[in-house]
Length: 394
Image (cartoon, rainbow, N blue to C red; front, side, top):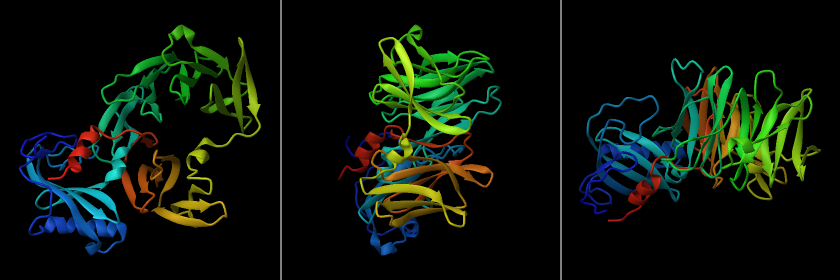
């Protein structure tokens, strides 16, 4: 793609005739961007430089970084895309001649976030599954009218859709922005669910019909409906989560208020629930950085903030970030272990934030979701094209 050729990229930017580089005189809006980043990172403005810049024409007033719920004016806006460098990290800004928007660390765009947002008037209380960047911009609807979801490490998604009080379906959305969802199961009630490590089998808690007890449904991903196996849960067990240990599903349940784990083993045609006396918490394993370091998320001693800490095997701790007046309910970590998504509440409102574990910067992800926000191991839109464009020299 020549620099003189106009092109529309993932963020809706229309290129103008220019090359990378610093301007001869720095406009005030660029100085404002540097000042903004210096405040975010606690660095002096002189430690921040314009690494790359390009003049563009934005198709609307969102400056290429729209946020959920916005209705920006559809008017062409002349501006710039900036990459500012600070501490060997690159940060994205977009500007008009008088204002700017922050796009966060460039490396954050390798991942994204998912949350369900309400659909007014939906009779089954489903919502739309919205994907955004880790700074809460560039929303895209991935699935319409679902009630819950579980992103998978390979970029696929399991989701649950309610059709009525007595009918729900389990959906599988393969990895890729243009793929269509596929129904795996219909039942009276569904809960939790995941794919195995090879992404070839799935498992989900299910109640086939009203009055039925909970069971575990499991099947090869491409199998027909009549090949789905139902395994009744241990007596009095209430479903919590389901995992895979190699070829066998492992369930986390509560029995008389106590948390217990059972592995479903099979010999020939006989299935047996074998209780696991000890089972390492998968989230704790996910937050293990290496043999000597792990991440811990907990309330501050005063209970007014959520702290993200790096903890060593020796017991030493270091606070990486503090999120004021925030109560974390769910935590998810990026594949590179450099960003943490915290979902929870601030007062009576649902909120989510992204924590940059390298710098400690806390990035608001938004509010108003009707589900927990979870990290997704896929970029927003066609980020690969935009990234190539951003990194291209003159």
